[in-house]
Image 1 (spheres, rainbow, N blue to C red):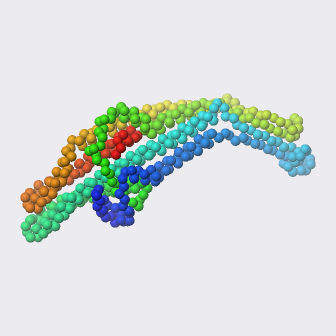
Image 2 (cartoon, one colour; image 1 turned 90 degrees about the vertical axis):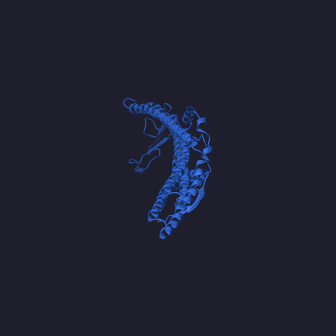
Image 3 (tube, rainbow, N blue to C red; image 1 turned 45 degrees about the horizontal axis):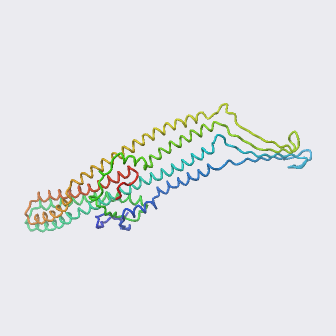
Length: 419
């Protein structure tokens, strides 16, 4: 087990194992590694190749059947395998001929299965890419939140040293020293909790990019306050776009198509297939060297594939229900994501951009005045708590805006705002 230690970066402070390499990575770079190395995607892509191979198999014709029988032992001539003029042998060839368009129907079903495999692959990619984006930005803002703690922690550590000296000289009471230390330890505890959250995000990023030996530091230059407004998009247009681009909806639609094709195939299976062939018999028929043409077909007296036809018809009704449900799900997800994006945008726009800078300037002034005993311990601790809450809330609002846009992109099936 490795011993964790802190690495300060321009983006924040994170804990990682010294045995791992540290790599600052942008979202495009992360996507490149994800698409080329993610094992879930690779495994799902094999299903596409399997389905395409099954299309090839469906196109193949049935093999002909050849038969040969020879006299094993001729007791009259006391001769083994006698196929001479005094012996007997028989030969024949048969070919199964599928009727009622069964072969073409099987090919169409195989092609639809291949399309379904592609739909599932791209839907998995959509889901995993959303997870990658969400984790990337979550990690970015967690780093910023962790780094924000460094400013008051550094100030309080310096103040603690000074207060220890003043308390030893009897200038201040032990109560004041303990109160400052308590505030310092509280901030460090909260920072550690954020670091643990970042470590969880980091573990997911490593899994998505299939690299457990590198500690990724997400780097983003997205200016949240300068992103395009969601209000320029109208909900009905977004829903229509989701209908056209959501691969899970295409899975439901193509599943319906597959079941309709299967219903057509099962009805065709009620038609018996034809077996045609030719036979030659040297001495076992009414004449020597007899030749025959053969035709065979099952008589559909009992089994007319009734059960499979009924099951296929029910599967169509089931698929129609699932498709309707999936359309409602898509519409609901777009509505929810759109509303959330509007709310986070409204909240972020209501905050003065210069408010954060004013707080940062005031922090230094408050600390200096407290050291000079110009303000009370209560005022000092209240301000630090307000500063912390302000930084975290501002950071969370920016993250919420990014996450809302990513969620909207995910619900539509394609990015309407590129981050």
